[in-house]
Amino acid sequence: MSKKLVAFFSVSGVTSRVAQEIAAVEGADCFEIRPEVAYTQEDLDWRNPQSRSTLEMKDLDCRPAIAGSVENMADYDVVFVGFPIWWGREPSAVDTFLTGYDFSGKKIVPFCTSGGSDIGKTSERIQSLVGEGACVDGGKRLGGEVSEADLKIWTEGLKL
Image (cartoon, rainbow, N blue to C red; front, top):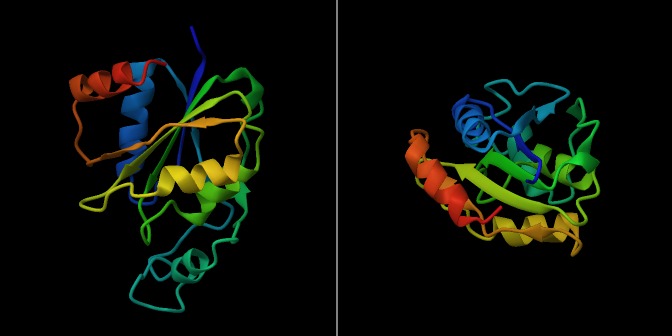
């Protein structure tokens, strides 16, 4: 049986809730991807071209510092990576997490939370960040409310 981790970035709590549900269904450990400097409401104002989140998302090479680390990453075979969709992709803090570890030989399963935006080409971007040594699943968009039964159907289909 493979050892699993659910790593997630959440600002509003929606992705955190879904991540905890996935961890419960999969018997996985959890790691919250938290920026060293928490986002304020002003930082998250997508209508402001000078807000922190807007500036970070415009720069594809932005890697904001994150707090904490997964000390035993080598122990995990499967890593679920969850995030809200920002500007059509994963937030820059998730990129910091993904470029901070060696994911060779691991399966990465992205999932996003969004009221309407799809996961798009995020899996391809994640593959480019972690390198060809990892296997990145196509990923899935999950709404804020997802049943345990639906999560089981999805994860069983992944053949982890």
